[in-house]
Length: 403
Image (cartoon, rainbow, N blue to C red; front, side, top):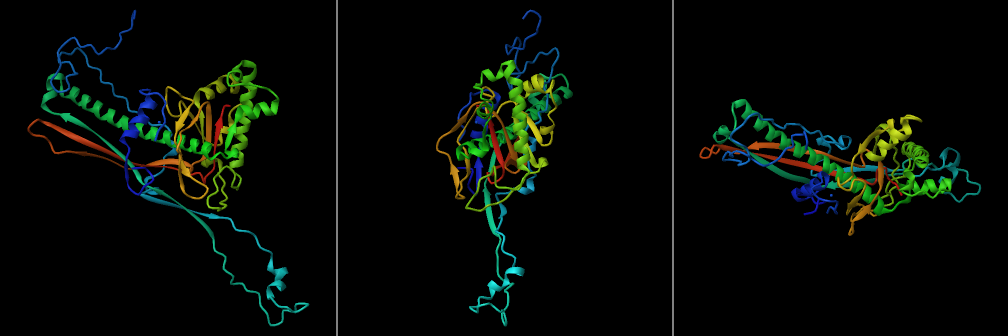
């Protein structure tokens, strides 16, 4: 079942595919995303305990790998009360100004006198002018689950103390927690990629910034993706890129319909203050800018005006600067557009958007135990996540491409 229905959407398969690309298990694909070192090895040189058959029974020292993971893209997370199974967004389009009747009232007498005297007539002040309303709707909830088993008596032979057993159980719980934490991050990652691909598919020239092409046009140069990184070219080009980004973020603060999709002819005027802007920049390029440009020239004060985050990869960790996704977005007629073909792009430099252009929320996250299995002395714990991610092209958003 697709995500755009008023229902619960099982996304375990999708979550696994996104996770595999993000962690390098799989390459990028469309998403419908000894001399002295002691090397770790899986070869076991002693016996196994009987439950996992992966933990040795004879131990010298046990090191428990417990390291909690904190997800990225936190700026995209919204509070849970904002989104339910059906969420509506109500907006108002600007109307047109009218002539001032204080100086034009005779025309409203609708009298064929010449000249119009107005005697016995009146100006109607009860003329109705309704607000021009646009309502958009977001449907559905994404959900998936996982579970883990805690054994009681069977593991005693594998550990030397209750404290060691407790640390082992803590390691299991932390690992499951890290999986869910990273899954939420990668759903946010897929959401921002869906926003970028939608911008490309809509093909609004004001929202697709071809940095290299614009720079070449202004300077008369013929730089390519390869030659722009040469020492003589890189610093001036990146200074210009920062000024271009600064100009866009400044234009975001103007109340206009620029950088956004107009739906059903409703001319909704928006402005995005700096504090409500989100800038995501490709990390390798950003690091080179910081080392080769900013350190010797100027500080990134423009980017500090908005919430800026560096992104190590957009969709797949093995293809960090690329996106490959079939976007889903709202069309100019108000209907949902599900792209038939995947939108691919290389050398994605970044994206600038309103905080309400893309985001997600965790509606509910539960962990519930099953009844204890007295016969086999173990207990299962079931974890379920209920999420909602959204993309709204009626809000301002721009993609930056290094081409």
